[in-house]
Amino acid sequence: REARSARRSIGGKVGPPERRVTTLIGCPLGKYNDLIQTWVRGAAVPIAELVGFRVTDCRDGVATIELEASARHHNQMGTVHGGVLSVLAEACMGVSVASGLADDEMLATIQINVTYHRPLVSGLVRAVARTVNRGKTIAYATCEVSNAGQQMLASATSTWAIRKAPADTRL
Image (cartoon, rainbow, N blue to C red):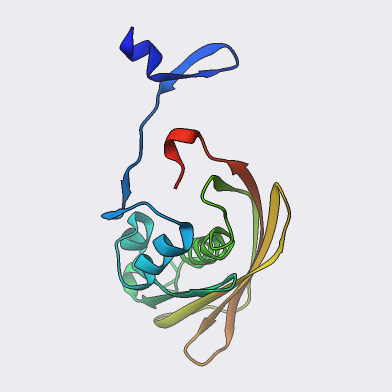
């Protein structure tokens, strides 16, 4: 009976067991901006650890993520894989949009479009994203991914769904 009551009802059917998230990246959940600032200070983010990037700044809907690209990020052509740049752009736009969320909201990517402008073999990669527009249920963001010489490597746009977070997972 307890297991059944711990499950969420989806469309009248019993869904998978829910997990109550009380901590994320080793810190208590709080407001999104507080959480983002822990990332800026170096708290672990699983995808960031996997790829090797870090959130370096986020203010007023503008986020910055950096990566020191190396051979571990290469494709078969010996340049940084486009998927790495796409991950950087999406993560950066997500942080940008998340910085404007209320404590009872969550977001999910609806669409991302990435255009690649030039290859990179290694070195600093910086993604800067801006929330362009935020409505009640949809947000739009843009991102520019550049090298250390400020040459654009890729540009991206995204659309985000804004939803009420389930009560037991709210920040």
